[in-house]
Image (spheres, rainbow, N blue to C red):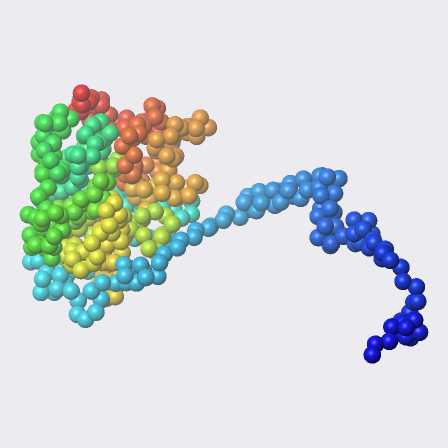
Length: 449
């Protein structure tokens, strides 16, 4: 059936009639087969790095020169923020923005508030610049236009007719840190810069501060200009939209950093008495009189952050102001604040501001950042860090002293554990001025034992 004869094998295999067995081995790939392309590239790179290191050094040096030259000629502005779109919809969208204006400005308006004067009245001083003023000393020099002014033609800082003492408020929580010399600097700054015959500072607290020897000395020295009060939130909230809510009764609000409860207290005490609020971590450098005619908060810093633009470290509203009433309404309907957050501070002011714009109601004023927060800007135009010793080459204090005379204060942003360097700029240009007005430190405040 199958033909395996030699003749048939020759017919089927015409290529070769000679079979070699065993077959020869294939050539070794290590000797004759071409290398993969990636292998040759890797070898070339290693060779280049080993043989020509000068080429790599030259490239790096050239790139460094380009970067340095670019930073010398150009000033970069880079800021990247990420915010949840859902968070923006929930927290940034104007509240109470549908329908008629809130009753705070209509039927619920307090009879003690003159809305025509408050919203549309004439002002002597302009406190809003219209621009961010991030260049050079623009912001500081704008601050210098308030008061007597550079031409000497404007009214003086104490232009207002004294009919009753102007009220200032501040707050200290007794369970955080004992009231000591660092805290006393703020009180000394107040009595050294504000007209004592026409001013009154109320220090609020969540406990009794009277036994403190430092405060006892201030009370005895300035009995008409200084007062201690204990906060009672339910009483302060009477007549506000927050009355009867859990925020002011029952558990209330509290956090370890005193941010949320501090933000609530600043609004309630100003609502009840009117006046200017000054944070305890502040050193005042001049009279606040030119600001009294305005209701305002202040910019957070010079960067004009779109979602965190405002700060309440320096804040002013008239007694029973509808602006504060609106803020209480927003607090009532908004989600509960997160502890140690600015939900009832910067975020609340932004909500209220945008709501007022949406309802075509003139909003409260926004003071420029440098009025109290000159350190919150770029390296080329911000005030030096108050807790870092001076650089010897920068000890020329004349220009800095002039700037401090233009702005209204220096915001220290807490940092209670730090002390001012001896003979630093705060010691030389701020604290020693208080000493010349009030007497040496230690005469009116005593270190706690």
